[in-house]
Image (tube, rainbow, N blue to C red; front, side, top):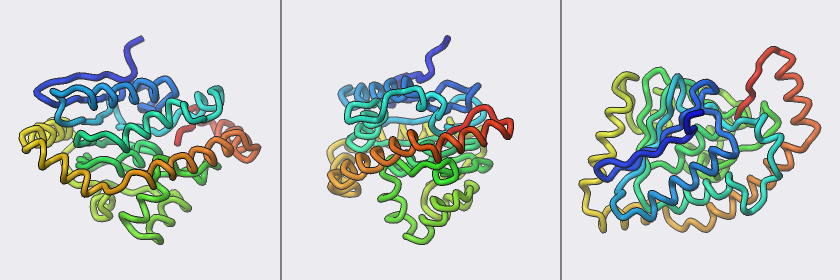
Length: 253
């Protein structure tokens, strides 16, 4: 079986590519482990000046693989999910994302930590956490209201309404729309542009834009505690049974 997270480095850009196209790049615990290691490797590699997140196949990311999470250990302080999210917050290299297709759950919330987000015009973004009897993660409960306002964030998170790429750009979740066949090339070009910026000024500006990371780290722990409890709840398990009874084989969030 091929690697489900593929990491390449070229000309100062570390590309971290989700490579589970048969499951629309739904993320397993093992993939979180690989993603955390990839970010750590990019952080400590002095030749890396920017990190690009992308996905193979028809979608950027279909969210968490909830079947896998049901069989995984409870989310604790050293869980691969928390390790990845912590490194996403603390990454000092510019982060770019290339988004296409049906992008769900963590596939959307991780974008809140990216400096540039390029999306294919046909992309659809959704965060159906509540419908799946779960809660949002990746500090989205803190960052999303800051970005788009309390009521718009409530509409997206409480009702789980999907956004097309143009609406996501209007709200500020996406910085640039491109044709799907140009997405990866355009994202790589933006990444290379960032590698040409003066490193000291670039890093200092990112730190100023992001501010104190401590509240973000605290929120991730609170979200993870509730997310883990919901995974063990009868409400969630009943939801999964209903989901499967409708003939859908791969719930994700």
